[in-house]
Length: 214
Ligand SMILES: [Zn+2]
Image (cartoon, rainbow, N blue to C red; front, side, top):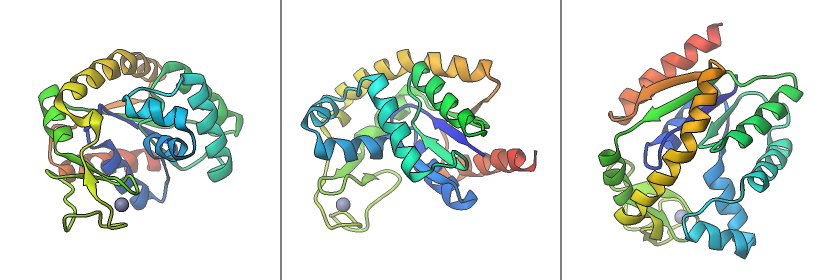
């Protein structure tokens, strides 16, 4: 079972995807984690990320497929968090999965209102050291510093309300095409993301269980 989970920044898709990965023993792939990892070793990528931009699409596809080839080469039981962002990335991912005799089974789109997104992102903090994301509204660190490494918690430059609006605009214009494609491929399930984390998770678990039975 391969699952794609998409949603605007701040939709909580990462939290949901990680929970699902644990429950269903799926390999958790996060494009955000991969790009942070890449930006540590590559100043050019770091500059793109700091501006809130995107790595050129084809290049991103290459990084992703090479990473998956090493870490999840069977191309099965993967949950894709926030990837693919663009239609050409989707096409290449599908080709890779199908080349291994597998398929993408389900795509979940977490729908969240713009007001909710802005509220959630403005309360987001990142560990300056390891990149772990916390949310002062939902995923509170136990102290003043990062639970994982003790690093300082900061608000990312691109998490300010002004740049959130800008990012949302960019996100919408690109993701709509991917959503349309997923819908045409009969993979898309829309889920109301304007609810409490556990409520959303319950719905997603039901959805995955129904696919597992088929
Ligand atoms: Zn940390």
